[in-house]
Structures are given as structure tokens and as C-alpha cells.
Length: 435
Image 1 (spheres, rainbow, N blue to C red):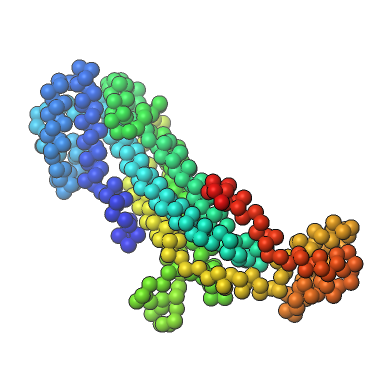
Image 2 (tube, rainbow, N blue to C red):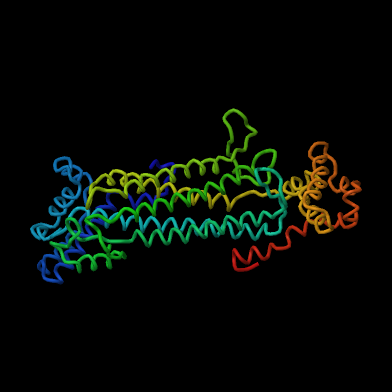
């Protein structure tokens, strides 16, 4: 992942030095467990832990060894032996490379999920604060991009909050599902290693034993994890697109904060472009793209193959780093979002009250007209507003077929904005637990 879209906390999880340190911890915990059940001498396990803990694993040296061995775990074990000494012969007893690789990946994905959850919490906090700030700020709701009926800007943000709350729950579930440990040896039968060792290592690393690992942890777990990241990214994009539309010059109901000294265009000095949310749309596409190869990794040959390995070396860092960056960028956009209530009101009134058409339609049906007759009466007056800029209420009051069913004074009462917003408190209570 390129530095432009990376945060150091997430990058650190995927650095080689971090990976090798986790590999050591897996091996050292396994050695301690082996010593406890008498597989290896306790003194040897202590030396392995003490010398390995004190060692600074030389990434360049491991790469040098791997250039000869063509095997990353063997290269690491060789370098570990250089630090530990003769007792290193007791390392990796009965274990296979996948025991180390898969368990390490689980640790990394759990740590990554922790950071991603923190990013979602930041988004949730920003949305809640701004939702209450604009809880009763009226704005026009749109379907198909066309004016529909009134809502509030606070409800728009509450909708996003509810979506990201679901995403947080999904991420917590995906993290739990991926948090498994496999220390089961070749083809996963525990032939040369006791299952108690797996249980011990899992406990030390905050994981649970994989029920049946077949040498590798089943990749349906990983598929679900990366699919969840894709769903979260889609929610990022949905909110980003909403902001992009609201920032269009013809709408201008909200816009990204434009900082002092910022430039919008190399050619046009007047431009204030929604560059952050456009960037979020692009990043979301990338995160979703990583979900498909994760799903294709599920179908491995027999007990294992390594067709998944090259995929995960890329999608593990890239998907989590990209989404981590996107979540924190989105939170920043919401925290600093510039909102224009006066433009919302202006746009709301732009079509001369057409947003009350449904209320008039219902009143006509309740007054005895068929739905078809009612629809035709309301629509013919609405089209005058669309096509000629007429005042919708005035046209309705001038239509004798309408006033024969609904008196003019009753029509006027139907153009009360508060009618559309009377259940805002109910919605907020459902979303936030308070109004």
C-alpha cells in the first residue's frame, strides 16, 4: 500500500519485523507448552524464550537466507537458531509452516480489526454529534435525485449512523470468526504434536483453537472477514456520494471544509471540489475488489495448497490499510462538514410546495374520490408547477374538482412543514436511544 493512503498504526501491523516477532511468539509459546507436557526440556524452552525475546530479528538476514532456502519459515527458523543457539533444535517440534503462518495471520487480522473498529467508532461519534446538531434542520428528501418529501439533515446523518452501527457489529463478528489458531501439524491430525499445545498457544495469543484445520485454517473465515470489509467500504462510499451530491453548485447544501491556503484547481482559482469524498469513492472500490480473491481462496486442494498465500500477502495489508485510512478520512469529513441550512430551505421551497402532493392525494381519497381520480387531480396541478413555475397551492385552490372535495382552508393546512417532521424524535430514539 502506498504511503499516501496509509496510517502508521495499521502499517506497523504488516511490517516484516512485526510478522517475525509474532512468528517467534508462536514458536516460543509452543515450546513452553511442549516443556510443560515433557516433550522438550524446560531449560531449553526458557532459553528459547529469553534469547528470542531479546533478539532483534534482522529482516535483511532472513531475506538473505530465504534467497537460498526458497522458504520463508525455514529462513526465519534458521535466523532464530543463530540467536538462540543449540536449544533452537527444540523449536518447531511437530509443527508445520502453516501452523505459524495461519496463526500469525489471525493475530494480524484481529489487530487490524481492532483499529478498524476504532475508526468506525470515530465515524459514529462524528455522525451522532452532527445529527443532533441538525436534528430539526429541514431539507428536501430526494428519490432518483428528484425532490420527494421533506426530511431533516439530522435524519440523513442518523441513517448513516445506524448503518455504521450495523457495520461495527459485522466487524466484531468477523473478528471473532477470524480469531482462530492452528497448531495441528501436517494435514492437521496432531500426529506429531499434542492438541494441548494448540490450546496453550491460542490462549496466549487471544485466539481459540480451530476445530478442524486440515493443516490450514479454513479460508471461509477469511472470505467472510474481507467481505465484511467490502460492505463497510460500501457504506463509506454511500455517505461520501451523498456529500458529493450535496456539494454540487446547484445544490450546495453541505460541503467539505476548505482550509486556508487550499487550492481546488490548477487552472480555475474559484474551484472548491469535493476531493476527499471523491477519494473515498475510489478507495471503497479497492477494498471491495479484495473481497473477491478472498472468496476464491476458499477452494483449496485437498488438505491444503498455497494458492491462497500470494493473495493474502497482498490483500491482508492492502484491504485493512486502505479501509483504516478511509474510515478516518470519512470521520474527518463529517467532523468538519460545512452545512448550509439556508440553502436547504431554499431548495425545499424551490418547487412551490410540490412536496405536499401525497398529503393532498390522501385527503382527496378520504373525501370520497377514487385513488385514480385523486391522482389525476393532483398530478395535473403539479405539472403546472413543473412546467410553468406555478404555485402548487394556488393551482389546487383554483381547481373546482379539488375544492369540491377538500375546502381551500383545509388545503392550506396541508402545506405545514411540521407535518412531515413530527416523528423525528421517534427516529432519533430508535437510532441513538434518546431524542
